[in-house]
Length: 265
Image 1 (cartoon, one colour):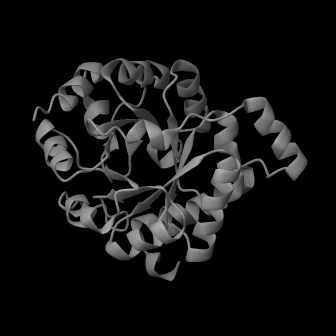
Image 2 (cartoon, rainbow, N blue to C red):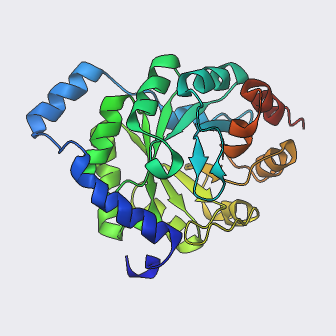
Image 3 (tube, rainbow, N blue to C red):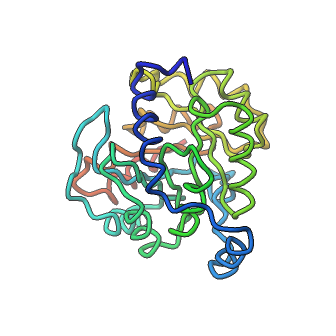
């Protein structure tokens, strides 16, 4: 997309387009149906996040990020996922993009380790990536609104549902948030980090909360490091928060997650 030229996100998407040839192509519809029948139903990602009693936490696994650099280069995804489950996570997010030192194999290892819903977080541009996520054990898939023209976003939302995945549509401003809802998303996220510049505006998920009706699941992403951050988001009636770097940097990720959840009234 033209407005992304020269931005961090634009460069990542350019690299992702070059990688698409290595993703297994989407098989014929009859073969897709056979795979889905063998896999069985996915876990309900939206329901796992919509806890009326408290804010839910999506705990993220990533070894690095373009903004933070290396975090835990040798981290074991199964060990972290297990710690997250024991710490009370509602779901686990797995970065499968190479800019985060991730892979689809990390997703498979997380799926084998825990029974929580698992989100594939990547720069998804094509249906083949969505089907790849489903085969690897994902229950949900990230769709970045800024990376997808409106018709294509709607098509990917619909295809994700067809194969049993819940799309999490991520926005960074009011216009993108409106596009996410119009595309048919039930779970919408507001990323405090602008993927064009990597700058963080921690108030953004708070400011945009009132724009989203209560029948959507509203997720705040990025910039959550302390209990005070979680407390402020809960008071704004955010349904779930996605936390990655703070947990990956912690020596004891289970204890760090338990501490974030101990927000009090």
